[in-house]
Length: 116
Image 1: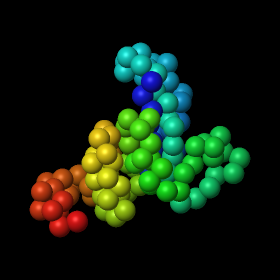
Image 2: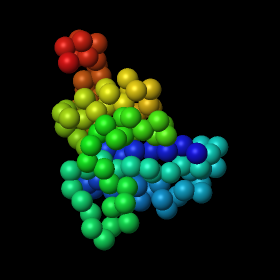
Image 3: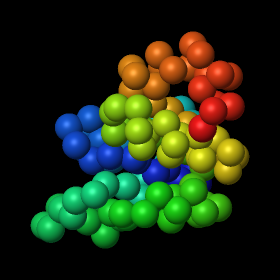
């Protein structure tokens, strides 16, 4: 089973979780294994939302969780998104992002990476 952490639970993050849940069977077939959202990182709590049991407020809980294979970053902005993505990659996790600002940084990744 592939376990995923979603960083951010705003409009995009909640949509990612909803799509993964609604299309779990189809996605699992295409991936060749079941997919599960294990954690969602956000500053806020979501009482009454089924995701609340998966909400974490500390990135270290995602980075240090050996069960999490994939990190989906949908926070937006450069920081703390860049630092979180960098740490996830350094921990050996696959990362997917929709963040245009991070994609812009990727063009100058080497120089930025060496200064942070």
